Length: 91
Image 1 (cartoon, rainbow, N blue to C red):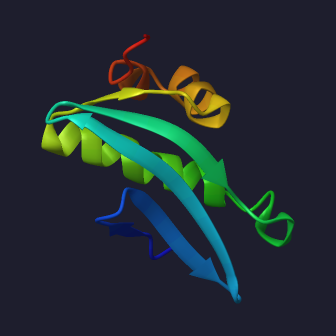
Image 2 (tube, one colour; image 1 turned 30 degrees about the vertical axis):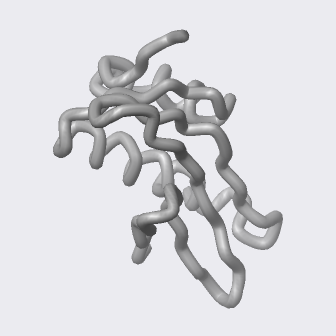
């Protein structure tokens, strides 16, 4: 899956003409708010949401920032992997 990180605060992937996204806001140099994940029904069950979340968590680990998981999906993904859970900050 070719996930792109855009400067406007989102990760996006196009698959078979359908766009899925994960939106975030940068709150400071070391903190972002992951507030929305949107995956069209046509892409549901294919691991697209998980791949988008992985892109955010992998960037956080590599670039040294933490994540506030305002999006319930992002919060759920953080609970599934201990290394992702370590990147979460609760408000």
